[in-house]
Image 1 (cartoon, one colour):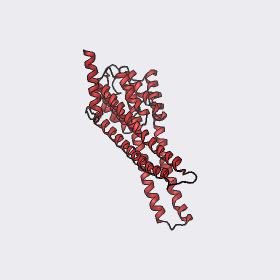
Image 2: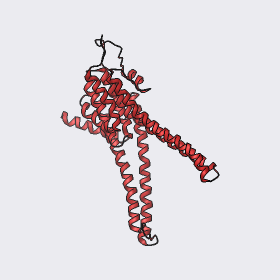
Image 3: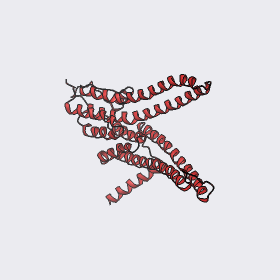
Image 4: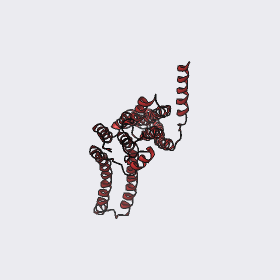
Amino acid sequence: MNNTPTTEERIWAILAHLSALAFGMGIVLPVIGWSDQRRKSNYAAFQSLQALGYQSLGFTVWILSYLVIIIVAAIILFFLTGSGDGSSERLSTVLRPAIIIILSLVFGFFALYVLLPIVAAVACALGKDFRYPILGDRLARYLGYDPAQASEEQTSLHEDHEFRWMAAMGHFSILIIIWGMLAPLTAWVLYGKRSDFLKFQSIQTLVYQAGATVLFFAGLVLYLFSLLFFILGTGALENPDLNSSIGIAGLVLLGALLLISILVLLLVPAMHILGQWAGYRVLKGDDYRYPLIGPLVEKSLRSRLGSKGS
């Protein structure tokens, strides 16, 4: 009875874990590793799916942790500066340790995010069955992965749950701007012909993430364009003339474009939240459809199938 992973299995597992160090760009490697090894090695397939989950779910947790730290830090600094007597020495005494603690938390979370994939890669290089905290054991149960079984007794991972995990991670990766689209795109290319469920989920996720990305950059462009028009139109860098017709028009356009850009940029986080909800629903067993986009993608796929059938 020998369950020691082969060199090929270890290499795929190592590459899948270390791809997290590319901060989004490497998310395609675990998908490829899973696709190549899912019928060859439960070990390599599980490690690849686990690495994919760490990059998508882990990145989400990482972002949310930073948001919590920033909000809590802003509140603490507000009360600390407000409770001081106003002297620079007093503020320096109060703020210095607070800033040190905040920076330690920020860099500590970042170091932890980077360290875990390295530990995982080293463990896999040694042939160990590495599990990320919280994520690993839950995923093993979800996939039906049991490394204690003898090699001749091992069965494949739960196929439906494999596809659901892959689809859900595509939804969760929406927080990874641009590079997050690589996960559903790669899943669609590699398994679109083998699983109608994964094909549909990957395509609608790709379209949805592309829309969120376009909105994000459109909001930034509108914001920058409004500032540029205001600066050039009023001569704000030298002697601004806000009473002229150009100056008034610049102010009106600035306000209008800023309002539009703010609305657009506020819509993007709402789309991100919906993406997280979609991933959760898929893991729970639903064939989730995004509003508007899901039915349109489904209709398009059916019309293509109908045209091929005729």
